[in-house]
Length: 356
Image 1 (tube, rainbow, N blue to C red):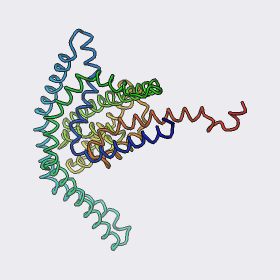
Image 2: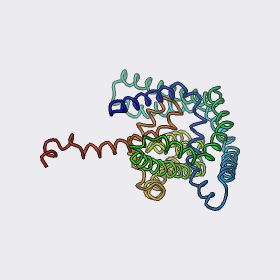
Image 3: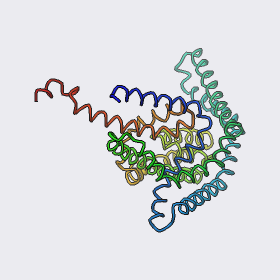
Image 4: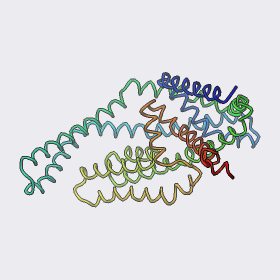
């Protein structure tokens, strides 16, 4: 098979895979989640094997422990989260009214310097924007709590994901060997080397950044709750979860928490305390957590991660979000490999390379 036919073969295979992924995106969530959990637990399972346990027993122990931890966390957190979300939905009209009043009073301070007709239009625009914002947030939360698709996805995650995790984790080494046997023999060493780089990148990002998100979410949730902020638990956990996307979690969490604190408290001190919690969290993330837990092993630029997650979510929904980082790692490693080959090829050196 010549090079042109090989390229055509792999491009057609890639196109078929993308089309299948798009068509089946509605049922892939538990399988992708199970694969992600199996990938994260595989090193621990390998260590248990070295301690003398069989692969099946090690897989069973890890799967059961993981399920117990998840169930315990859900039993503790879900009632509080649902309660705060329900309370937020009920109080959203009041927040909209308070925001409108605060906006009007703030605009009144500069009313004397602006034409009255223009000022009236600005006030109306701010009031309408506030109402639309809170209406959108209320509808989104209500949809998350009551949507049939969300319920179906949750049930599939609860029922199917543990099964997928168990079988993938038990057969992980055999699956890896099978895929290795499928590799084209002439290019197998290079593909193995690139796969190792992808694995190192994913391990550094998913395991390291996942731990950072968990610690930040706990810090934000506890800190905002102790500061007396309503819905502090929900905002803190959401900010920690969104920290998986560089800079997004901290910015959204800061804006939401400071905005609610501004509406809730009558003095500036609690608002400053709430803002200070996020600044401390960012300092911990930038100078302590990320250097120690993630370090320089990732090789994924934050802008590339943000683009990959947004593009994956737009194309394939939540499944695309889960697949975004692995795909970004593969594309990043492949791009660096192609660039290295290009810099050492006659296409880069031109006549100078041939003359030497």
